[in-house]
Image (cartoon, rainbow, N blue to C red; front, side, top):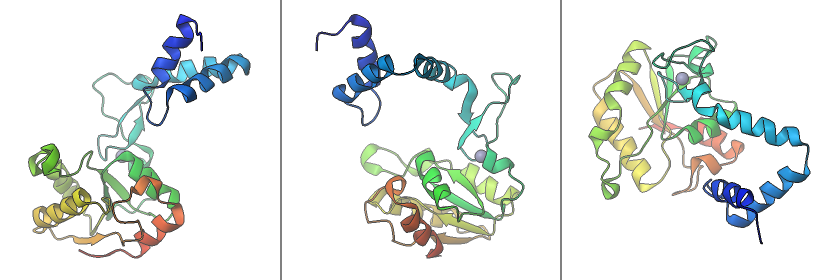
Length: 207
Ligand SMILES: [Zn+2]
């Protein structure tokens, strides 16, 4: 395609998104050109303010909206952490925000979350000290958590992380459970359908 420099710039930017190749990026650009111009304007506005309006939740690591009028250094809390109907004694540990969202889609999680941000991975040089275990331990104590559901993926790194948490947090008076193996081994939690994920959560077992 003999594209204009602007089209090429847009295609090059869109192709940097996960799962978007050059052809898909071209389709997006051509679609935006032929559809209601407001869509492109809204998209541009939302993307332009993404980093100002969203930040990681200080308590759990989920994506949180920054309240208008707050300053750069202000801490923000997500909807789940501020929802008083959630059971604060039940805390679900996940590797990434994608996994939190997959569990939320099941509609069966009544507690709150803690996002590790990464998994233990000796091959990638990620050791125990690079995981936010002290912050997790503090959260367990401050919220008087009675059950910690470990929902790291059923991969080698996910299992190693679950065992590490069991070892490091074993001293605390908290029951630790592991989601059942409804999610295929080596599979990604974010791609599990809500029914499978709901079953994995309901069938959790003591770790
Ligand atoms: Zn939160």
